[in-house]
Structure formats: structure tokens, C-alpha cells
Length: 124
Image (tube, rainbow, N blue to C red; front, side):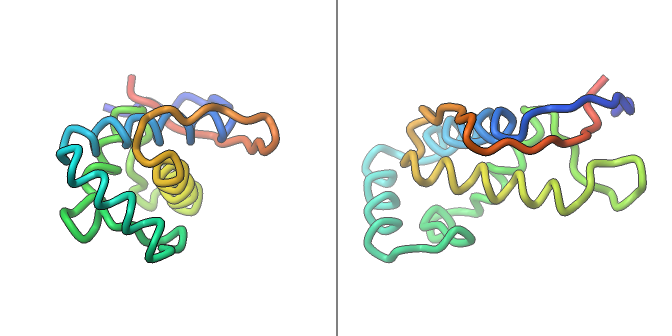
């Protein structure tokens, strides 16, 4: 159950939390050998921020969906009370990019160089 609770979070902190959770799930889903192939393909094929070699091996969207849920970021339902779908998509994409750049090690660190605020709804 969701409860509307107005909080402000620094996006980089939330992005990092989601990225590291996503990496953890990806490491559970894939063997070390598969991850090495995925990382190599990501480097060699120069995937842009919207694409990732994990998608060649599974529906990694489900892993990101799980990571978002574990980080208490509810799916948008296109109602006025939920996180804005554009914010949700931004978090999803940025966390995926950070995770991919970190090669799914789960060692992404917060940076103070770029901060945005989000008003989100959290699990009660």
C-alpha cells in the first residue's frame, strides 16, 4: 500500500541506490562469464544510454522494475498522486546508465556535482 508522503530526495542519491540495487539483481541473474560478455559488448558496441547488452540475454527491464520497487519507488499509474512518469523514466534511465558504466559491480557512489529534487510517494 502506498501512502502519500511528501519527501524531497536528492536524485543522485536515489539514482545511486537504484543503480546499485539493479546491479545486485543483475549479478544474481547472470553468471560471471555472462557478465563479462555483457560488459564487453556494452564497451565494444558502444550502446547508447538507452540500450544495454543485458537485453540480449534477458528481459532486464524486469530487473530494473524490481530494483525500483526495492528502493520504494512506486510505478506511475498516471494519476495526480503518483510520482510523475517523466521523473520515473528519468530515474530508471539514469540508474541503468550508472549501473552499466559501473559494469554492474554495485559500487556506484554519490556525486555532489549534479543534484535534482523529486517529490515521491513511498510505501507505508
